[in-house]
Length: 264
Image 1 (tube, rainbow, N blue to C red):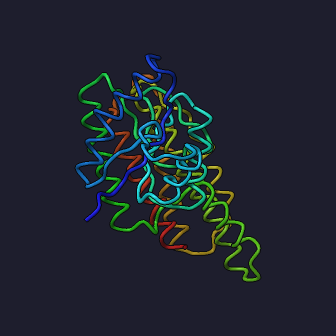
Image 2: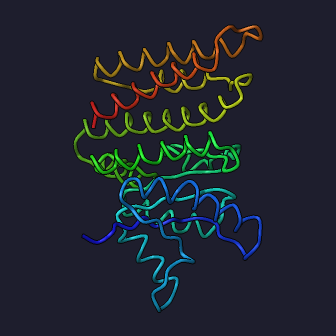
């Protein structure tokens, strides 16, 4: 049985540069062992040994390999060009980024792993999360969503002659926006003393014309939880811990997924 390949999209940089050193360490200590534990051999562009044009070989790996892991650190343009190709074909993908860096808006709605390669606890947590995402994708890759696939789905629904499908487009749009917002909140929660104001989320939900009573009920629950977070954010002496906030966020994420699965 041939070994499965996990192609690694990452900023590489010049030899001996800080970018190269970090990329090498993340590949060696985070990505490669996590992929190997799931039966994949991790390969980065500079490790391709076959003769031929490197650009064509990179694209071939991005399109054909069963798994891609992309490191979004430093917002490298080559990384995002290659990431867009993988997004377009909607095949298994795991995203990670240096801890402390902000995820670019266009991909903020996609689950991204934060890692500090100099922190052993962070490295172990990142490896566990990579393995968890790989196993989830292997179990059911049909649920993989990318900004491109969501946009195409929305376009098809909005152009439908069926009024119900056009209505579903609004629900899908709302769920996508909510997931993106939740991703941003999780990033801010890395600093437990700082939470962003959330009233705009409740307003966004209230403006949606949702026909399904079950969906309206779930969105009402979302509004309640968002207001709960907002209320705590406005209290300088709030007693709620980072764990408490994460539990609320997990409930919000669960509801958004339920809405998506129910409506689509």
